[in-house]
Length: 126
Image 1 (cartoon, rainbow, N blue to C red):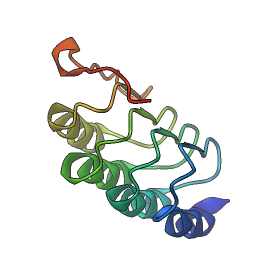
Image 2 (image 1 turned 120 degrees about the vertical axis):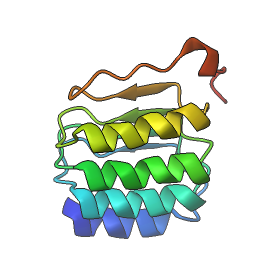
Image 3 (image 1 turned 135 degrees about the vertical axis):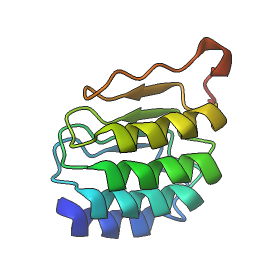
C-alpha cells in the first residue's frame, strides 16, 4: 500500500478504538509511512501490536516510532521491525524508548538483536 496508503490508514486510525493489531508486513512502507504511524501512535491507545517487517523503514522512521513510544503511547506491546533498513541510530532511539516505556514486551529487529530487561517487563494488558 506504500507510504501514501499507510498515511491514510494512520489518519483513519487516530480515533479508532476497535483495531488492536496492525499487520503491514511487506507493504512497501518507508520512513514517511513510519512517521505517519508514529503520529497515529501518539494519539491511538488501542493498537497493541504493530508488524512492520519486510519494508523499507530506516532510521528516521524508527526514531519517530520510538519517540511516540517514549512520549505518549503506553499501549503498544509488540513491535516487529525485521528486515527493514534500520541501523544503529534507529535502534539506539528504540532502546532509549524501551528504557522508559515498559509496556512494550516484544520488540524484534534482525538488524541487531534487541533485549528488553526482565525488570522492565510487566504482564500484557488484555
